[in-house]
Amino acid sequence: SNTVAGEGWVLVGDAFGFIDPVYSSGVFLALKSGEMAADAIHEAIEKRDFSAEQLGKWGSEFLPGMEAIRKLVYAFYNKYFSFAKFLKSHPECIDGIINILKGNVYREDVTPIFEPMGQMCDLPETVDHYAEVSA
Image (cartoon, rainbow, N blue to C red):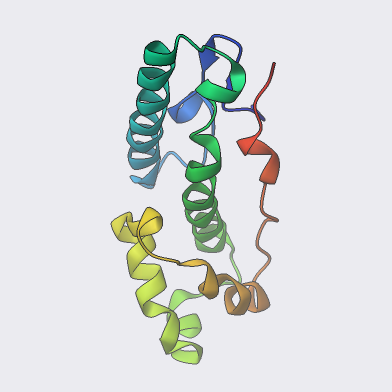
């Protein structure tokens, strides 16, 4: 899907953004998106506003963390990429990788690791349209 919400509906977990069946990050993202969407739904009930904008307001906060995990997964599956070689060349990136694997993608800025990582393997472009809502 390319939207997190529409008029009267919300997509969370794998209904919204399937990334990888092996990494536990999929479970984390499903739970985190559910938590964020629940806050938007709770607010929608209080305001009696079930518009796409209200129900989808969590998308822009959710997207950066999802994108960080998605890029790390792409690197993992790239047959030419080695985390050992990457960290040997870029030891300053170890905290970023650890934070992604721990699920700290919403507390820490992990994006600086992707520029040097992208020099060692092809990474997907950031998908900005996921944060959009549908009327």
